[in-house]
Image (cartoon, rainbow, N blue to C red):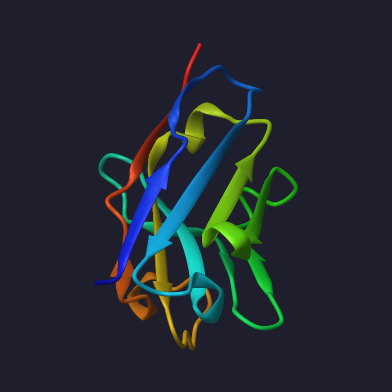
Length: 124
């Protein structure tokens, strides 16, 4: 059974940092394209950062470029999202998602497997 579990969310002050983790079970995550998405109240789920299998091509939404970094840890079957210089507008539930073949990187409709999400709140 394919399962994704996110962790690492929490409450942080503006300017702070968090590292989210997406741990996979039931399959080898390094063979899959993986993405981090977020959804704030009243808004659509949006792609934040994604990484392909193989070459590891990455994508970052304009709103997080230079602040967020996505990486793989194949030994632990995990993908991380390091978030620096957090802003109140980064507040959302963050989800990781995966699929074997993604045609449109970071398009949420292209990912079949999803975790349950982890809450990130940026507030003073």
